[in-house]
Length: 67
Image 1 (tube, one colour):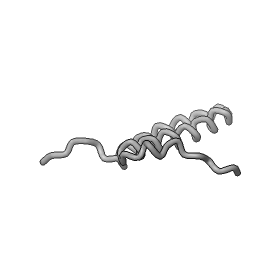
Image 2 (cartoon, helix red, strand yellow):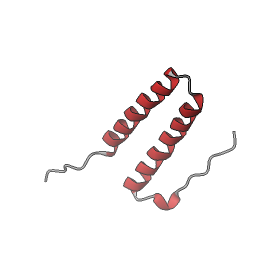
Image 3 (cartoon, rainbow, N blue to C red):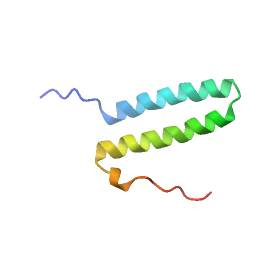
Image 4 (cartoon, rainbow, N blue to C red):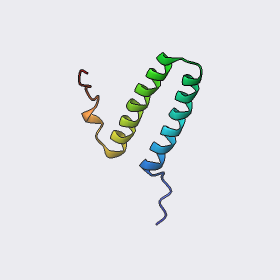
């Protein structure tokens, strides 16, 4: 049986690469607000991706602890 579905790790690596490029571009322009927004966006998107693949979306949204 040939499983052609992308592996979770491959999709996470691609997602990470896209965010790294976007964050680096934001850093280059000095846009710290965008850097922060993108970092939060990556966390959110990666968490949802994992939860969807693992059938755990009922556990979301995760609550962040106060710093």
